[in-house]
Amino acid sequence: MVKNGSKMPSFCLAKIRPHVRVRSPTIQLKECADCSTKTDDQISKALDEFANEKETKTEGVIIKPDPPVKVVGRKVMIVIDSSIEAKNALQWALTHSVQSHDILVLLYVKKISPKQVGNEMNKEKATKVPGFIKSMKNMCQIKQTHLQVEISMVEGKDKGTTIVEEAKKQEVTMLVLGQKKQPITWRLLLTWAGKSSVGYGGGVVDYCVQNATCMAVAVRRKSKRVGGYLITTKRQKDFWLLA
Image (cartoon, rainbow, N blue to C red; front, side):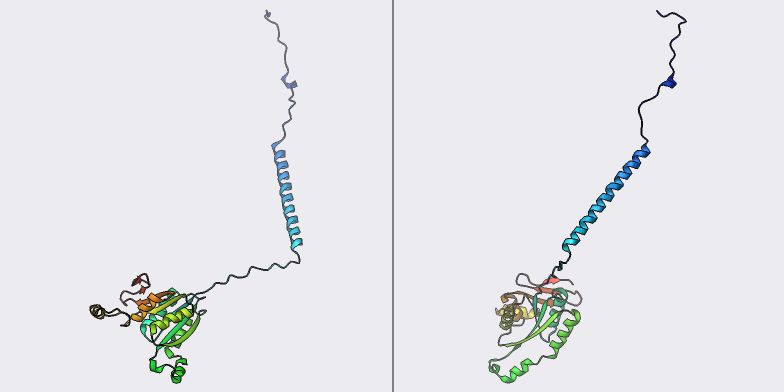
């Protein structure tokens, strides 16, 4: 039993002192910053030493640059003459097919009769380059200044056979020919007569497209009102290229 009036022993809270020391957060942050700074300095120093060591090893060694990649161009042959169809085919090739690193061959075939074979006068005339061929070559060099243009003039009894043989001989990649539009009445007349178009106007182009060992393309300009070109190959006929 506790007697009334008895006094409880007094405690002095001021005398109680904590024995746990709490470090200041500012000091901790400062020490961490110093550690990170030291770590960054050590990393940069190690990288510098590695770079210096690499330079020391490669000192005196000549490092040759990689040789430039040589682009192999194609050889494109275009059959030309003084007709507007040949000029249209040349324009199409320069704008749609031929690149600056290609070789362009302008082929001119002169058809001769059996009586003219072996005539020395005809051989001398064949060596002279006609004016329209020179103008076509100049047009090619104006369109593409770095394009290599060659002129090839041959003679033959049959124009279609001569073109196919010359394209095979020169190992061309593409053969381009200008095609002339035939009137509807003429085509109906050939159909009624039971004759093929070979040898009857435009037959040379058809023969070359079907018998050339390389890719052969016949080009015909669409009407001025519509524009574009009609492209004929061995697999497709009169494909309209609007350009």
